[in-house]
Length: 91
Image (tube, rainbow, N blue to C red; front, side, top):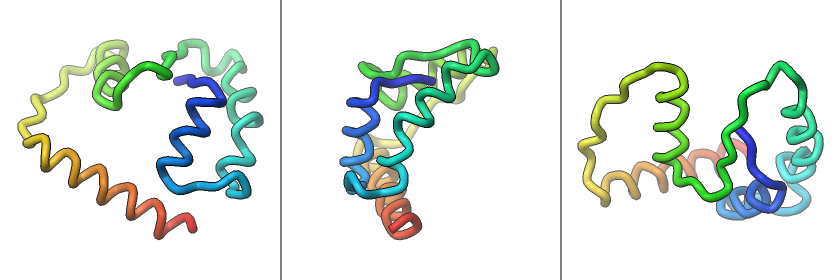
């Protein structure tokens, strides 16, 4: 999976990670690591939603996903819960 440094920075800001956070400081090093041949197949995720990334990975892996029957409100609530969990665990 790959995204531009700007996209990664934007995603980290959404997680309330500042420029001094460990994750922010690791952007260049981690993106450079993805250039290694061990990571031959990349998915450019800059313009993809989370659902699109999941579907792409599933398709390329030969996995059939079950339908997501959650309501939009439940999906938003679940994502907010995960974000709050990340903030508490990594701050």
